Image 1 (cartoon, rainbow, N blue to C red):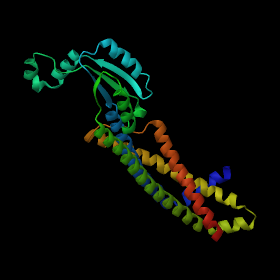
Image 2 (tube, helix red, strand yellow; image 1 turned 180 degrees about the horizontal axis):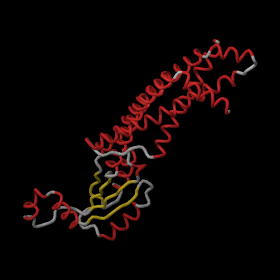
Image 3 (tube, one colour; image 1 turned 120 degrees about the horizontal axis):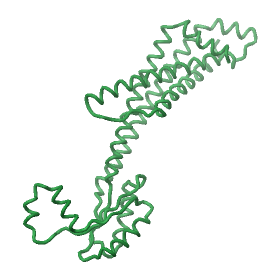
Image 4 (cartoon, rainbow, N blue to C red; image 1 turned 90 degrees about the horizontal axis):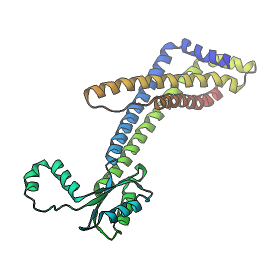
Length: 285
């Protein structure tokens, strides 16, 4: 292990320009992946904020006693999809309307009778804020005998679902493309190193070195380059994040665990590409 580690480190000194170039290229490839992942995370966070506003409102028939509404809310809270339910009286509904629709204040002042009904506002759990779950809850709420109407913005909830799917698919496709590019880049640099040391490898085989013994330093080298590229990519992503946050809008960056996972992903990419390249090209020597 110590010999393999020493050989992997020495390979950087044998071809420093090639090593720096490969690490830099890997870093920029992973940097693009990091930007895509960051955009995806921030889009998902924005969509989650919008999703928190998903609610189903049950408008009650006039004259429905508050006791009946209270019993109904107890039943509604037993729904697995429901996180919370609250009663809004006719007076509270009018007060909200006056506050939120200030441009119609004169109209509200001229009212002789409150036209707004009482309602029950139903908030769903995060995992049930999709169109199918909301439809199912709304259908059950319509079964209450005192329910006058049920509103929940079906069209925009369906659009929210589509936006989530599109954001996830685009992030996955672009990340996969640049991950594949990283594998090719690391594999090519490892192949050049193998070819550069072909005579040394041939001598090692003559003295009885196994394929695993020869291959291990190259695997370590690929893992090092991938991890260093991942670290550099995280640094570049953080610099880009600071610029965007200062000039455009505030967002979220990788958590320490996510950043570590990104570096680990670079290491695994380096290990995988090295294994693919070394296994093929050692057979040619």
